[in-house]
Length: 119
Image 1 (cartoon, rainbow, N blue to C red):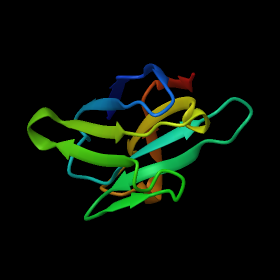
Image 2 (tube, rainbow, N blue to C red):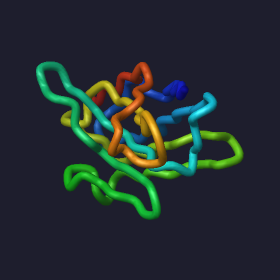
Image 3 (cartoon, rainbow, N blue to C red):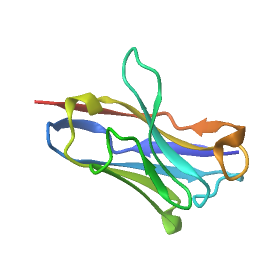
Image 4 (cartoon, rainbow, N blue to C red):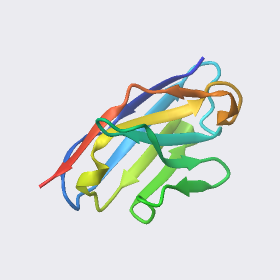
């Protein structure tokens, strides 16, 4: 059993920054497992933004601007987003493995947090 709660979204001007947080809990949750951030814009499919396991992976559209990290003491996953662009506007979701330590058996999702970037 895994529960994920995201926070930190909001409205930000072009070029601004936001930090998203995802607090995990439950008997099957470990912050040290593979974790990821996805996003979904209206009318679009959900896409992988960044993930972390032994190392970090970034989609090419956010590389150099976003940083994924985690705090084991707080069971919290972060996504630091800098130099935000209008195309970053989306609902952002935290993901943890449904079973085990990786995503081979599926994802557990948080409820999402909305990020809106505009002038």
